[in-house]
Length: 442
Length: 59
Image (tube, rainbow over all chains, first blue to last red; front, side, top):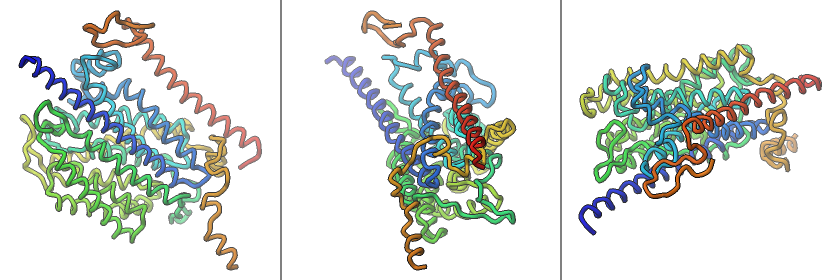
């Protein structure tokens, strides 16, 4: 083998390794959706179980063609703000030679797929918040808007090597807490304000009633599956280099080892914080795991692991009080999406400014600083909230946002899905042991 | 339709069924139309279900 042939072989091996790496990150990320599926179905009452599942599956399915149609172009072209760079975006239009089978391009498909899974994640975050009363068609429209336009515009601004938030403000968010979680959480908030609560959720005096899902175990297992999928998600947040050290999306050096330390510290701190605040409620504990990881995600390669634990602990502590505040505002967030994703995404982005200011960014970009992080967090929150609120307002004005009260009371499964989640009627929620015991006792 | 290439030698991008830019864009638009039609149909289904429930006297 000549030196040139050897060089070509090494280069090709590295290219294939990169392709394989992102392929498996994408595969692991599918577990996020398996988790959201179980999570939402468990959080629904029996009469809405399948409708919640169908909604979640369709969120995934519809964001794929929509993200192919426009999402990748937005990411490549919109990094300067609202004026597109058509030259940079050319590789992302659906008729580009990179956007399909191409023996000369091993990268675009796997990167597109990884980003696509991020899109589906944002849609799933919304999906849980609006269960049991949103129209399926309205949800699909909102999921497409969030998954294929809104979050990816935020990513182009703040999760891109030359995004304006980084080049002008020094914004740093290694594992996409801002553009994925803050944006999706605040988009959900905008939708929830327009959508209103489920029938029976709030009393005329403003107090709230708990509407328990039919299967807490299904919800908790779903949340744990999301944690497994998170490892694929976080793996997809680091850039493979040909024969060189890994980089963040901002072209600063990083290692997967740093990610490993701090992801697990994030999990641990978040669970323990939520355990304290919820007095051991498993739903909030597993939500705390998500919140903990999201809290440390913006500085995933930077934190000393015990510091990551503390950041995550506070992240785990804040979700329950934030959810209570949202409930007091008569906003019915069925799964705590605004608190877990919106609030902790915001908090995590700001904490990088508090704790890691001064780390250099690549090129001419300013170093990480508190002002840039706070400004970036507000940009993400507004970029999520405004479109969610406006699109939901339009759908509501057209009478297309919410199912009729008769459908809601009967249950979406019977009305619209026409099949049963538990045909043998054996689910604990309908053959409730506690009710039987109570009946026997009386 | 069919193969856009005659040999794998030197082949790079190969988009089956799209051997011209016009065809490529037509298939792309068709994909969007199919997805859009399904959403439209879901809206019709929801409207029909609500009407049937109201007609059956379920409030």
